[in-house]
Length: 453
Ligand code: GN1
Ligand code: MG
Image (cartoon, rainbow, N blue to C red):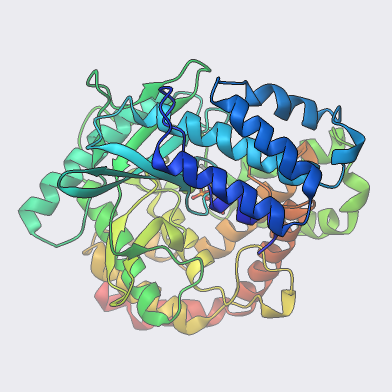
């Protein structure tokens, strides 16, 4: 682990009310230990001074700003990144604890840390303690660059989770449903002073999210859970849920946006991806493979990545479908397709060794079996006919979205390194090509399973 990441994970929190918790002392020790082990004495001395000043609530954000603008002392050049990540963590942990205190949590926050692999929202795990033991929560900041109307989104969230809960009681199917923790003034979200929307749910213990399945059983379980999820929301009734992102899976619109960015080239990045752009343009036909108005309008998840369903750590059984921000009217084929995209791929979504990116037909079969079982005969003939092309179209759509985001300057998806969106786009394009070579095999499999639909 690098020096910087060690700093990041070892921090506790200041409770933000002038009193320093045990974790604060622990963080102080962690800072000193980390800096010493980095062998960087100047940073060690400076941070020690800052920690003392912090007792008098010195504004760390000011120092972070200085560091970001390179206005730091030359002596700190080496330690700059270490220092910056320390200060960022301290500020963030303070903020996270302050935000948590607006929700009906049981006990005092003991620790907080970033959690999960989401590409859009920021997620934190909050551990609290009271006389009855530990209580763990998931706190999320809704990305309102992506979700323009967080209030409508939270209304959807409340309706969906309460409907699913009543189904769970009725069917006794043993799966969990996300439980919202209300704010102290009874709302489903907290709006902070900077205009950010936050929500909290109970942490689901025992569950794990997988980016790639470890075996076919994982793919089957995830597919069954998403199928059941759709079937259970089929009678949600009126009024329709709000479209939290309009035209979310309109591949034609995604393609048009892509070509617009290619011609506008807003960040002058086109020269880095010209060959890739050519390849993408050649597959334009896929942009019209699934036209949503031709299919039943259902309440669907719309973001059925494998890691959006928690599987039991040991048994691999599905525990809970999560990430409900895009649950809205849509097309079942996109859910099926997106799960195949993530669960029938031998590699990660952003794999750079493209020889590892391969479509796995046995996973596809497991997904089909699970999904069909879960959605209990809900699909109609028109949908069944498109089950093979759906994953190909949606993989193409994702490749387009990643490359478009690169051309726009990496505004939408979180990126962890330079060129990350290019890596994702290449990897998804490779997966799409691999799927195309198995298209006949997929169609054949669907024919043999017809009776189960
Ligand atoms: C985003 O937030 P996350 O990581 O579950 C994105 C999906 C993409 C996915 C690709 C609202 O999902 O559409 O398929 O990244 N969600 C949104 O990893 O755009
Ligand atoms: Mg998501």
